[in-house]
Image 1 (tube, rainbow, N blue to C red):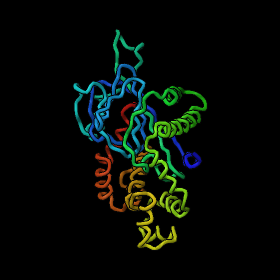
Image 2: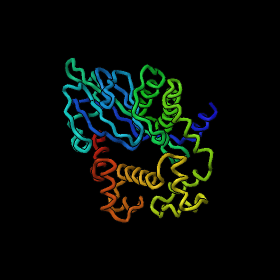
Image 3: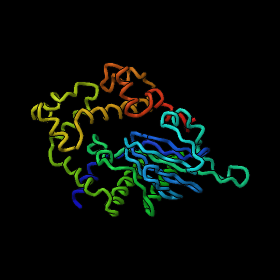
Image 4: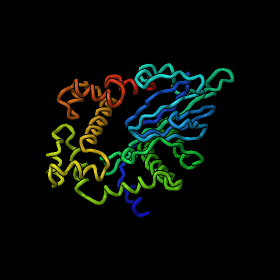
Length: 311
């Protein structure tokens, strides 16, 4: 128990966004992808299907997708769904969704399928994406009334214009993350992977590497530099990092750089060239190739994700 408390205490948690959407046209999205953690909550008269397992999630049930985990999702009735790739979906998403309109504002007795989703960060020492580091697949959450209540509270607060809204949402997001971890422990899901994360607390040199990478994404992050940070040999640093985290340091660095690039694309009007340089890529064309390889869409189209329901 103490080990899991240490993990929770080390987590920095941040609310990103919350959207309540109506489904206009059933759609199956292949390789749906988001860099942040996503909690999908199914609304009235609705279904969402995780095509990887064939499991259908119904009203007031939830699907949790760890950040960086692509998956195949069907929104709405499966046998009526149009199947498209993630890039086409992002480019044409207004054909499939709109901002939720309450039934009371619709003419006639119309029942529109809807759902809402919450995106958030949960990072160990504000450096390592916690759920991504567990390397777990998307999973359903059913019958958890407390977690459902927290999610709905976040949605209600996000839709209000009131003093202290951001503070309340962030407090609720922290509670949400803790309840997701409690859910995993109570249902004995991925407990070994949760326990494995204790490696982050056993060697301060690893934390030094995480912190250095976070603060120097635009600079030289070669194994030679990381070896100096951790005070180990250049030949050993890659093996050392992978032994404790399960991934190569350069793969981790690229993910961190791309995660920051996504955040800059969503929150700034900086050019792609400026962003590529800011996250450590001197060659913008190479950055664009790597970005599309990782996310399945060009960097320029990532901004369209933010434009859908903000107009």
